[in-house]
Amino acid sequence: MDPHLLRTYVTVARLASFSEAARELGYTQSAVSQHIAALEQDLGAPLLTRRPVAPTTAGERLLEHAGPLLLRLDAARADVTRMAAAPTLGVTLAATSTALGPRVLAALPAAGVTLRVLTRDEIPAAVATGGADLGLVDGLAAPSDPLRLPDVAPLVTESAGEEPVCVLLPRSHPLAGRAGLRLGDLADARWLDAPDAGLPLARLRAVAGGTGFRPALRQEGTDLRTLLALAAAGHGLALLPRSAATGVPGTVAVPLAAPRVVHRTELVHGRGLRGAAATLAERLLRAPQATG
Image (cartoon, rainbow, N blue to C red; front, side):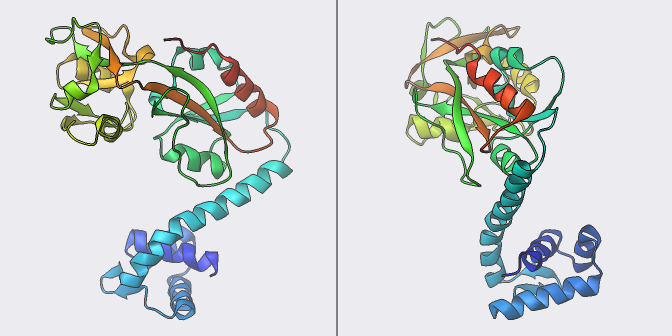
């Protein structure tokens, strides 16, 4: 299957327009139509209806394969280019909001770093395709257990630290005076759903048995400060790494007593790091680990 034809098909399906796809890809509309016709002939099935432009059943199935295939091709190109290129002076670090704790920030050099705050799902792909030299991904895990990351390319993952997690409560909350809280006892509480700024509610359900934790308010985006302000204002609870939950005005950070999980951060990168990327990776990995 010609990847150029496949990329054209994915673009047409995403934009639902041959003309818009042609504009984005820099082709003529006739060339786009020829690409789609050639791909349909190769596969022996119609992939798009024309009015309106939409994937057929076979086209929907192809889309399920197309994303990972194209991502893997982009990752291969970026990996080879990275090996052949001279080491660069600067370095791009992609990280989640909650991975940027005090010890990570202290490890950053005074200059030469571009920081991209992305979602957990975006970071491995950004590193694989050259959008970032290094990635910091975080999540809930049993102590010393690795995170489950999407298999987008042959990336290296290394533990960059673990720390306790806390439930962030308004100071006036009835449970604010507790020494510790059990996650299972909070399944019916009001929760903030901010999967890209805090720790996702879906992960809370998984570690607590798969039920409860319905969101009272949903926040989209990676802005951690907004999530902290919402929790302080009483709009819902949030589970956060201790470093992010401690010292927020108007709130109390109560440690999670059960189940026994930690906030884990992992460094993600390609093989054969050189130059500024290798130096920053070394600093991040040797930064003082959080303690219980």
